[in-house]
Amino acid sequence: MGFPPDSDTMAARYLAEAIETATPPERLIMLFDRLEVDLANAKAGFMTGDNFTVNEHLVHAQEIVAALRVTLDVTVWPEGAQLAGLYNLWQSELLAANMEKDPGRLSLVTEMVTEVAATWRAARDRAYAPSMATVP
Image 1 (tube, rainbow, N blue to C red):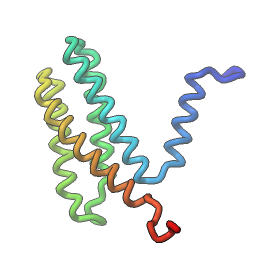
Image 2: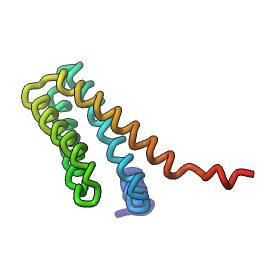
Image 3: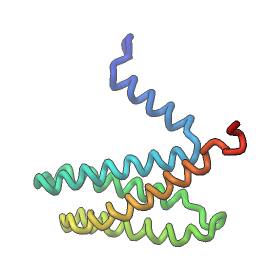
Image 4: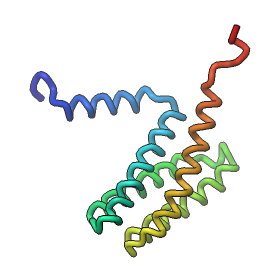
């Protein structure tokens, strides 16, 4: 690596540090942010007939959903079983959307992801909002 580091190296270092220092709720939001980007990029690929782009982003979206599912501990949070079922549905729909090149399946998943992501963001915002008791 030369000096000064190139912009790609700096960006990668910044991202790695952001992930390492993020709280668990922030990491969850980061995953959903990237999942939404992948779904939007796959949709754009469908619209232009670019199957390479569709495949690339749907595969990455599946990897994110798998990570979400694997890190969900239903022994600690039994209600998480319903969320695990939703993640499993997303996995199968994303796989089918990719295999069948079916943008309708992608739209279904995108709608659900958008709703769940908004819920997680709202929960994070409530959990990390300054207490009203400290306001003068």
